[in-house]
Length: 113
Ligand SMILES: [Zn+2]
Image (cartoon, rainbow, N blue to C red):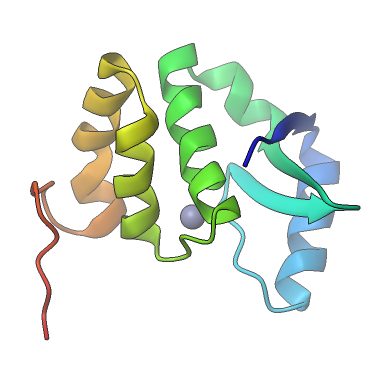
């Protein structure tokens, strides 16, 4: 699924975040995915877009596109994203893995069951 990207200023982002959270959706702090009138969108917080380089931005977009493709688990979404990303972005995502998921990146997901 392809997505359009839209940047929202701080107020717009917080407004939509609240709206979605009140409807029971989880919204990531810098970006979220949504479908409006059958179009898929990745909404990006302006302050975030301005604070990262393109490789970092690609990580966040790929993560949200994973959600658009029905991958809802946060770690599964990052694994899905890894497969779509270029080398630089892959490294960035792996470096952030512990911060995002509480453990280091492993090739295969450790199942606890
Ligand atoms: Zn997410």
